[in-house]
Image (cartoon, rainbow, N blue to C red; front, side, top):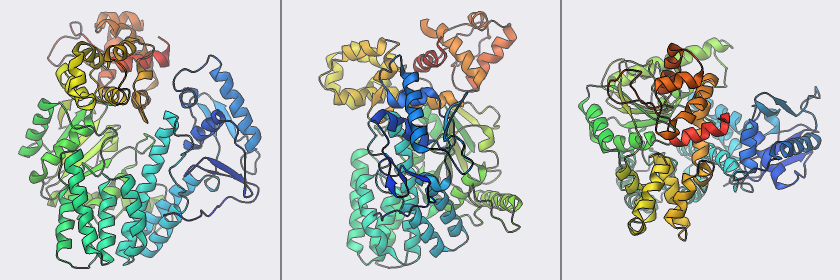
Length: 620
């Protein structure tokens, strides 16, 4: 699948590699990177190149369970050793690692890190494809893939923090591989991709785009029976694991192959399914949310509401609900259902040009905008790039006006990220998931996801640990789901952990979760961590909101707080307290009563696990 990578660092420069085991080379000679904890620090810094990495993130990566009191001093020792080992950055002789108020920052140039080089080549390849230069696109994408030496950071994945970053890198590599394979098929060279696609499908069996490319490569190579068998295996896997059928796009591809033609095909972009192509991080069977799902189906199914916002905190199951609804609404949207994530893998917002380019590719909209980071334009400046983006935005609006499709914009950070993407006319509908309320969008239909009811949470837990074990100690099971605050992700992680620890009594695990100082440490299963998911939501908050949340979390331990108590805890006037609390409600960090009630009479709540995380961060 891979070839020896081409190193691009100049003589005398250090070249780092994350797309495989962590390595550093100087003039072709591998450098010793020190003990494991020092390598974990370096891997975490390299995963976020040229970006300050908070000390807390480094601490979690090195000591995920119980950091010593000397953790900060130990980190300073590891960073100092890295400075000595790696030397200065660039010709100016600047410090390679610097420390500021945001944490430690590792200075790195594109030619010194394989992931930066990988991203640059992938953007250039997609730009070439957008211009119709398929041969150039295939060459650039293949050059990017040649940097991929295996599972990223595969020697350090026992650290949850590093494993999360490695997972993001692997997802990027898979997407580029799919781009390359589809380009080769369009060029009439399907055989070059067959073996690599087979290997990747074995490792990622539910990734639909990989399956489709494998089917196409086999079919175009004259191996029709094998191509049809790939679909049949996928259909059975989907039914067994998720209780779903393959998407209409995959079914259409299968039907086209039954005609025994050899012309190159791929699933019709406008009919790309949102479910199996990109499952949520935790793929347990969908459970609960009957009222919210029914409301979502009614609103989108009747066609009267064109924009729906599903909001809730990180881990509330927004994406799972959206994917479930999209599958059930297949017959109401004959022109397809597409899903686009509005954040990058590091949690930052994608640009409008980047989102439009992906929508254009999925739906066959002409006039793809240049991808982010590529400022080339006909007039040699950014103006041409803006013009290309504007042209694609107009083309996207025209496409929506002529089609009836469901567009899922997943994990939207703010209103600005989706303005201009929503349909102004026609019968397309948009389903938005977001942590915050996105109050600046109107008119929209809003569905806020509360915590799971006890019965729903117990049903989910029982699916993971077995109904018999649940019935053996129902009281302890109830304590577990309540200690999880009814957060679906936390209940899933508890179930996955207990499914492995078959010897652990439910009552003992409930005791662990009841301990505020240990609960978040217990909610880790493999590379899935509730703390890391909550941390991503914490980063969305403004600095002032984080401070307020830290103060209010202490009030919520006995079941909630009133406005009077919030005013006292914040040490401010009533109006300022109202604005502070309502700002957190808008951000999805504080819940309020569903019915109308005065601000003074309302009882506000901070979700338990978010409150525990706020205690960790703010020291309240």
